[in-house]
Image (cartoon, rainbow, N blue to C red):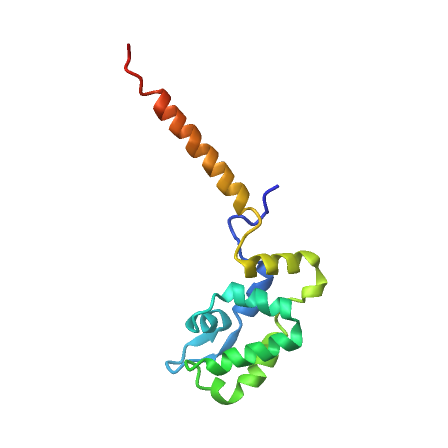
Length: 141
C-alpha cells in the first residue's frame, strides 16, 4: 500500500524544528534552521532525520557544531550553544513512535519506501506504451 504522504514526502513532525528561527542575518532577515542547514550545503530533512535518530543530547551537540559553522547569523558566533539547546527541544521524540523512527531512517537513507513501487509502475507503463507503438505501426497490408 502506498504511503499517505506521497505528494508531501517530508515528515510534518520536522516542520516545527526546521522552521524555527536561529536569529537574524546581517540584513535583518530571520534565518530558520532549514535555511541555515541549506546554507551549510546540507539537506535539511536528511540532517533533521539524522538528529532525530541520534537522541536529544547527541543531537544538541551535533546541532551546536553545525550552528557554530554558520557565518550568516552574527549572534550565533557567541550564542550557538544556547540556540542549539533550545532548538534540540523542538526535535520530535524518536521513541514516541516507531513510525517516526522509520520515517526518519527512510529520509536519512534517501529512499522513500514507495519508490520501488512507483518505478515498477512506470516501467510497466513504458513497456505497454512501447508494445502499443510497435504493434500499431504495421505496414497496413
